[in-house]
Structure formats: C-alpha cells, structure tokens
Image 1 (cartoon, helix red, strand yellow):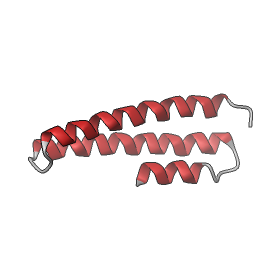
Image 2 (image 1 turned 120 degrees about the vertical axis):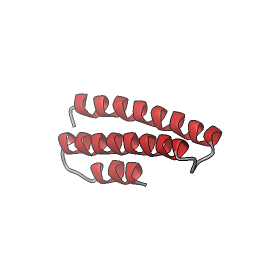
Image 3 (image 1 turned 90 degrees about the horizontal axis):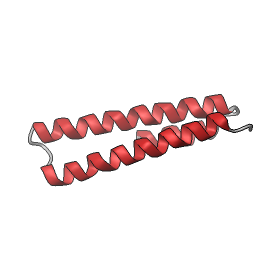
Image 4 (image 1 turned 45 degrees about the vertical axis):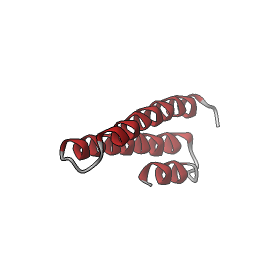
Length: 77
C-alpha cells in the first residue's frame, strides 16, 4: 500500500522535483517490503516459495520505479 500511495501522492504535487521525491520514497518502501519478505522467510512465517516470488516481484517493481524516477527527473514538465 505504501508504494502505491506514495506514487499517487507524488502525482498530485506541482513540480517534477516533488514527483520524483515521492517516487524515491515509494522505491524505499519497495526495499522495506523486500526486506520484510526475507525476514518472514527466515523467521518461518512465510512459505519460502511464495515469498521468493513476492521478493522477485518487489525487485521488478523497484527497477520500474528507478526507470520512472529517471524519466520524471529528465522531463521538462
């Protein structure tokens, strides 16, 4: 929820600098989710196979956010 919420909040901001900052916060939230998934595996709280799929998905989302941040920072509006 945090990732999507930060993306949405950023796009309600007036400047691309602010938009990029909220995308960076969303990327940080993605890293937090990835870490929590790994901790859940190690603690035996999350089934390993499902958790590893979720961890891979978090990495893909992080990569998409990185590309999106670069696009927003490079745009003129």
